[in-house]
Image (cartoon, rainbow, N blue to C red; front, side, top):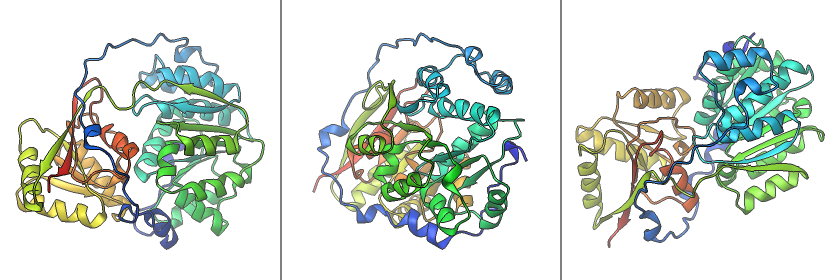
Amino acid sequence: MSYHKYSTGNRNGRFSSNNRSQNHRSSSRIKKEKIESHKFIKAAQAAEIIEYKNSNWFEDFAIHPKIKSNLKQNNFQKPTAIQDKAIPAALADKDILGIANTGTGKTAAFAIPVIHKIMTCSDKYTLIMAPTRELAEQIDDNFKVIAAGSGILGVLLIGGTAIGPQLRTLRSDPRVVIGTPGRIKDHFERGTLDLSKFNLVVLDEVDRMLDMGFINDITLLLKNTPVRRQLYFFSATFDTKVQTIVKTFSSDFVQISVKQSETSDNVDQNIVKYSSGDDKLQKLHDLLVSEKVSKALVFDDTHHSVDKLSNELKLRGLSVDTIHGGKSQAQRQRALRNFKEDKIKILVATDVAARGIDVLDISHVINYSTPHTYGDYVHRIGRTGRAGKTGFALTFISNY
């Protein structure tokens, strides 16, 4: 069974334990850090674009010819900076810490060497962890492209999906497992996933996983993988928590940083002051019906507040849907698909959407509620200002 025949399940059944592990980190239970309002204000800058000078082209890498063929068919020619620097180190069996902004091609930076190693070494098994279902699915989609026709068997382990197909694929000894820490842990504890042979381990968006409270799950899973393994850590930041987890499990790693700035220079950031709940909702409505807003991602704190806000906007005649951890995977996929295809103009979300939404034409990110941390803010506004376009980030601040 090849990679493009991946088993993901039918979206109906779900683990009760996984729901617990995914959702017990509800943002409503986490105390917000105080962020001064001036940190939400920054004009977009016409930064000088310095073109990266590659050391390699994809054709130059010592990778399996099938991978090169797949890359060529999908117009992969010139590696991004993180790919150019990380792929040779990964092929040389180095542990890697990659620091890079969102949208810099991190997935291919680890997918290419991982797939090459699996295709050329019969004892290689890969475990890939991501913070959200959406990001795990995005990684899965990239693997399908790069590994097409390779014969590699993989499985996607995420919440909101049926257990039966996952169990059947796990019994077939998949060489690649991609998933969220909670669902991977559930399979491990049930005895349906043997981690002792997974000697390639990738933690993508490790900073976000730690922010979401997955530290214990990640630690448990890593401790049950082989001592002799290769580790790939990818993160947008390198704070104390990230340093601790990296140094705990790797004594010798190559640090590769291509991060350009703390927040995107392409994002014009400002605040919206409001004097009451009604005033806040009215100002949001006025923003969303403005001609300047072509596609908006609106953040609120909890499942309940997201659903309530969405219903209020629908009553006002706006085209809107929601995405949060309380939705089934099928509902989340449908909302994202409709957002990408312009069937809806507005997506209201909790921070679960801050990673894994790969939509290039979001014009506005609106923080209807302030983020819990400044790091969350950076992740949120990274959804706009992409592909060289200027984006807009607006944060609502109480005036009373």
